[in-house]
Length: 154
Image 1: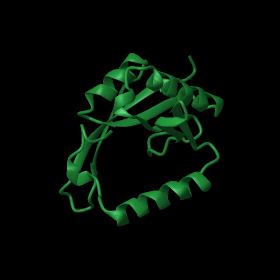
Image 2: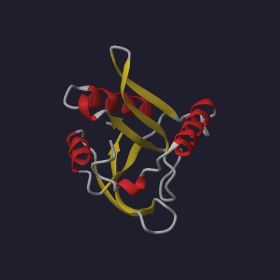
Image 3: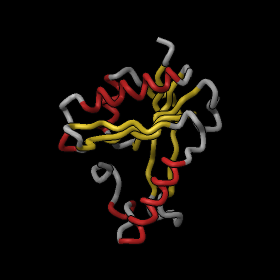
């Protein structure tokens, strides 16, 4: 899912990495840090084909009461262009609205043209914010991101 836009070094491998990722997911699902943190899952015949994470925006320039965040929206590449992504995004926006957020933001890899085009088509636009993440902590695997936003009051 990220293999098209991130270098292979960005993905830890091996059993330890899998166990750590599993623990992190289990903890975040069992005890979310905020009651407004949600995980939405897209299914096709009882098979997970995508997921989205929503919650309060955590950026310093965002208001965690008024600004929500689409922290992730991921779809199995083999399931694209079948409506799953659009339905998942709409469910995420509906969830953010139900949680009374007025605006939503999301970060994406600057070179992810597919996700950018999908979100642009759904009414999301750049808000001028950008950042560079150090994925390995040593500065050797860095990724540039841009932030998009959308008005939820419409």
